[in-house]
Length: 303
Image 1: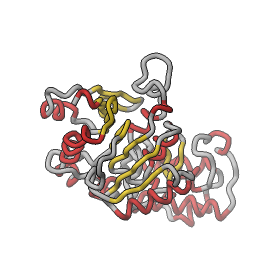
Image 2: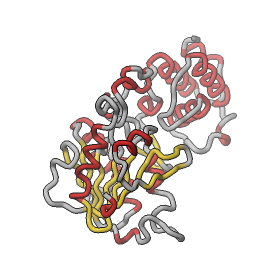
Image 3: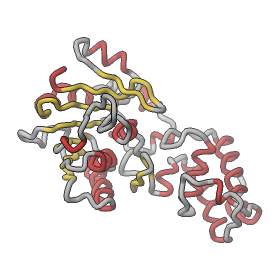
Image 4: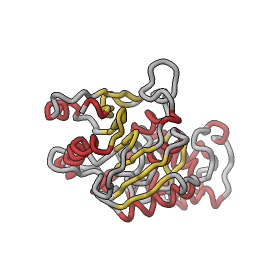
């Protein structure tokens, strides 16, 4: 691969660096799915965020001439993405869900939950038959396995009168969540709690429990490409079949839901396995733009 110094001396515009990055990423066989799905999307995100430009506006900047220092910066970050195989979000310390920015680093999984799209979509407070008709009726929300705190923050945005409890086992991840909660000025509405799922709770009752727990089997984790292996192992691994934490959440959730309350949980692509294990459970499977049947909704009365 061309050295950063050589690339910086030859490439002039953002378009030049974008082309260079896509070629380098494709040649190296990088893996994405950390908020981007292609080499082009990943390169655009990495370069725009490195330059502190809007990540959703590539076209206006493509032919902008870059300063020598900017050219070297981009050449270096392209090389680091290829050689380290770390997700681009770690290199720029930033990830977005539904356009909302979050600080991230290697202490947390890169946030990319489908629940983010569902929270900010038309399932709540919209015309028709939303799952929750009045968002102001939700006063207590519990976010399990909060990680970077992103879903707790989105829930606080979606339900303006809700107090949100966010539980996370990892102290390192809680430090990142604390930073994000402060960045979004939500310390007065989000309470961060260290602990293992519902164990820190007493007799609390919630209108809504959201959970994006680890749900990857041991065999899959052992075969991870470097991009996924760069994330905390505990954020992925959940027993031999990947469902240890999901089962624990299903077993305990009814105790902490108000009458009419519901659990929304992401479980990945093994929906069939879960339905076999819980044949009587009335799962409502929710689709998103990029997923089918990877998030379920269950009301307290349907447990």
